[in-house]
Image (cartoon, rainbow, N blue to C red; front, side, top):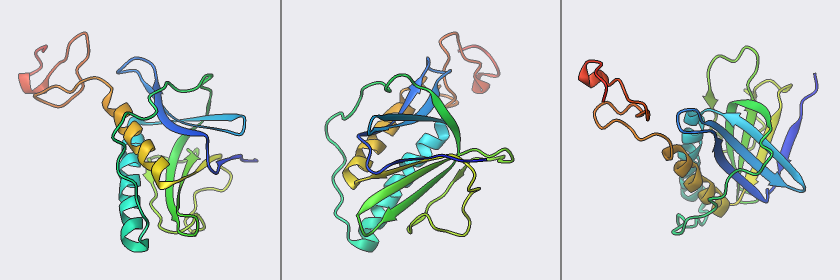
Length: 191
C-alpha cells in the first residue's frame, strides 16, 4: 500500500484547532502552504503533550546547541479558526519531534495510526528522523518544519485551544457539563 508524506517546509500556517462544541470537540493539526491544506485529527492529550514536548525541545536546543530562542509571544497570535474545509486526512497515532541543527528548525512529524496500534506514542528525538525504531513506513505522514519563533507561536495557540474547553470542577477536576456534573467528591450528587 502506498503512503503519502505531506511535507510543509516551512508552512504558511501550522496550527492546532478544534471543531465542535466543548465536550464534543475534535482536535486537529492543520498545515497550509503552496496551495495545499492538510488537516489531521488527534486527541486532546496529544495536543497538550505536543506543546509540552516542543517547549522542552526548544529549551534543550538552547542548552546543547546555543540556539537563540525568541520570548513567548506577548500578544495574542493567530486566533483564527481552522481553514475550511476541514477534511481529516488521517488520525494521528505517533508524533515525532526533532531539532535540525543545520537549519535551526524544529521538525514535527505526525504519523497515521496503524491497524495494530493500541496506544498513543510521543517520540522525542534530538537528531533527524532517521532512526532504527521508525514506525511502519507504509503509514501516511504530515511533516512540518518550523522556526523557533513559529514553534513558540504554535505552543501558545495549542495551549489556548486545550484550555478553551469545559471548565473543570473545583472539587474533582473533571470537566463540567452544561447539563450538570456528577461529582465523585459529592458522592454522585449533581453539582
